Length: 231
Image 1 (cartoon, rainbow, N blue to C red):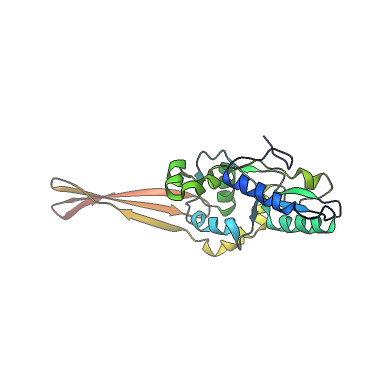
Image 2: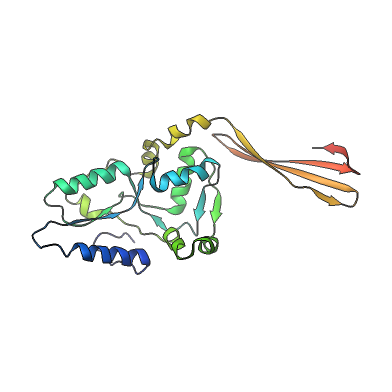
């Protein structure tokens, strides 16, 4: 269900905090024009949530959080700035405004899209119980989301420059930030197992390039400490 500025608020911690903040703001004199920003996740590679995501995605560790079905209300940083400036300059802009793009996506869709833009695999999954064990109540911030839409901004005439996620991510410059790392790289893990007089050592090597990721396994067999054969 799409949620606009007139939708009923939720009952989790962040929702209650938002309601309390807005009630305090409404204590202004009635003659004062009040515009409230309900901000989604602003995308900017130089800071905020997107900057923190880039490192794990760089190493092919991008992961869907929980079920991945929770919505991720995003907005390009340029549109966020433009909306706030529009609210300041527009005398008709009053009340609450969802500073979110008109096309919210699920966490699963966001993860896959960011991986595709960065040309990195994003196939991992962070289960909800693990996030709750590590983060406690704060995990709900990652595991829940709203399909928020900016009805109050679009109806009076605000126009978004970045309406779709993939071109919005590309315009942040995250792809350019990864140009220095266009060479293939690999990560190897060796685990030895011994059964009687025979020792088998598999070498697991994860190879990543800008276009694909592969897992190679080399098996080395040794008898009494002397290498016999390898493939």
